[in-house]
Length: 541
Image (tube, rainbow, N blue to C red):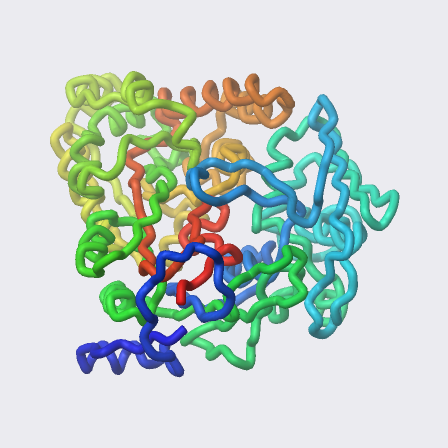
């Protein structure tokens, strides 16, 4: 597929050349034929260098997800395609062709697809996948079994295996995962791209999984063709187990940090995908400037204010409720999303189906008079001052300034502290803030947020919550094997957390990715997040 821009302003051309070195000429117009075609290069932007291939990485930033999602495969995956919403997580076969779950949701039996092979690169050299690979990968990610006593850094995804009893491999094609108690979210965790089946040979040779990657997924990372700080190149895995896929020959990830350069590159067809992760008004402006640009809708995770319970005055429930009651979320949605959004709930993650907007507004209320009353009852009739830290970008700055003005009306003086992303992450993880503003990281199950963020020992408990009622409710939803009953338990705990201001929710946006008309079969999915599902993508000739 050829795509060279007819022109770009000189400054933009100079800056963008680093990411687009070797870009072929412009793509032809699309045809009416929707039969998938093979071949071509799909180019998408990323905002950071691709630095690490270990899904258990626990540094200042997460491991490189864009390569991991496309080189590795998981036991299961989430269905995508026409009619499947971004947040609709329907489990379907991948490396496992079928599975059974015990009535108490404590035992999971997976039957592997036959004939699946690793890519034909060292050190796996095209060997067949077996149940032993699943056991090794799960024990490594969970730091259990063979890795229980290993002196490894804590795994950020160990909670996928909390309460694991053992993993059995009765034959090369069968894996039995047993938990000590019911563990209802595990099917979703077996399907996430954050929990893939990896190659033990790399670990055995290197002592880690950071620098090399070889899997059973649709693409192979071609390190020699990439350029650090500029782009990563993934090439078609011709031995991929799903016949005929991927359709693309190559998938290029171009490192473009500047938003205006991303827009210019998409407008000139140097990029096939454009995503603005926070501000739907910007996406709409870009869409209007590109004839035929196709929007693919998705919903953001909730944006919440984490109030540090260990710092006065946020150790008072009345103060936390006062903060929540002072926020006019309708005004926030109008200003920040241009009306393309709604009220959020903390810890609901991408599950925008758990509560209607009417339900949310019945217990997360805007009531500045009540806010003033609660502050007086808590001993702060004149209000107080607190610092709010947040990642420095235009959308967050706009929202922070609006909420600052809203809280000032009830006497709360927010000092805004925009930070570079790495420093913001460091301070948030260390609970080094009065209030930190964050977009909840997308999880494939609300349990991911609840278990990590609402428990006293949770790894993402930025509010410093230590409430036994919340803890019991979080554990109860984990153990309930009946899907309908579990949904009600999720509703109960999420409502309780928000109704009692254990975290202060603000807004969520209705966002969209944009592709050019010649891009076909591209789907957004909550597990793949903003980069979408590339194994099904093809380019019209």
